[in-house]
Length: 283
Image (cartoon, rainbow, N blue to C red; front, side, top):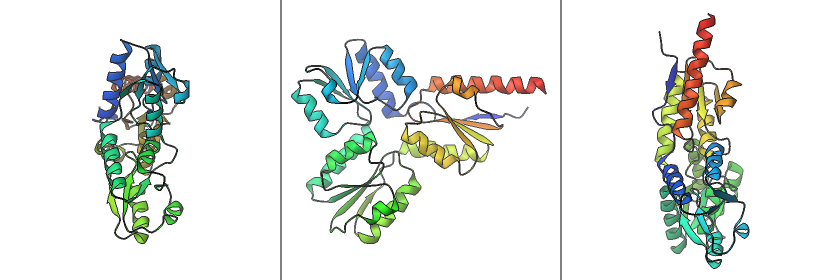
């Protein structure tokens, strides 16, 4: 019988999310921990961490002085971190290592008086952290129209949100180069994200549908779906119950966003297999 379900090799947490979640779980065994915003963009994981004692708040004003605080995987603005220090909080920095490298590059360009241009979503947690390090003169663009508003500069550096899709990054950086021909363009899209996207494209070409296990708040999940839907139908599911309400078309491919745990992906694959068996038994 021809196999009708193909699971991507690279599913589950990316390395940065793995580090943040594991370290948080370890800390929660020792003390009460606050986190400004969700540690990662995955409701399933956040609910589990809350049960272990994680306290998620919207801003640093809601954190008592002297508390233990996690810097989420997306990072935090420098102003927020400074505010926490003034409150004598114990800070645990679980920012993704890849983002820390981007932070360092931005700070270097800022010192060298570059005009910094960030390609990404302005209200995304990662971009807010990047922008705080780039300074007030930095620009964030997410469309051709906003790229057209970027001022000409003798020294400009272009940085991308780590989860932005490659097509958008190339298109918008190209628009910037029309006005700033000597701008330095840095493709800062996460390599793990690129690998997942490449695999998802291959999976989509062999499938009549692709199921992405992930949270709709997750930028990398949404961009993965955006890429796949150009090839075949795609659905995003956050858990088993949601899957049951969806119509599955075989052969089906299964992949995940970088913030979805592997065990959740495997549970959903089991559900798909059972659905297939039920369908075959009626034939």
